[in-house]
Length: 140
Image (tube, rainbow, N blue to C red):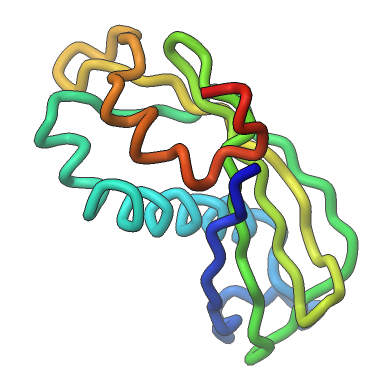
């Protein structure tokens, strides 16, 4: 079993809505930060993947809101890879404040050729790079 990749962020004032809580759309941006930081850990950077001739695009997103987060709170963002298919990757995202869940969700990205945006198979080097964060070691 892999372990989640984790990092922390602090909620900025501009991410909050009129009710004083993080505006719901910002959680997708936080998920995007998760992917960027996971790619940095796995490949050195997101650009490194582009330099090797592949990119990813979001095909599906799901979020479940559990509790509000507010300005200046520190949040832990966690991401794990739950499935690597032929052309897509499914990631599971957990955002928490301390031990308290804030948002859970998932993203499915499809691998594409960066010039044509045509689907492409996941390269073996991507599979190897993401292996430490796979939820199920039997799903390489």
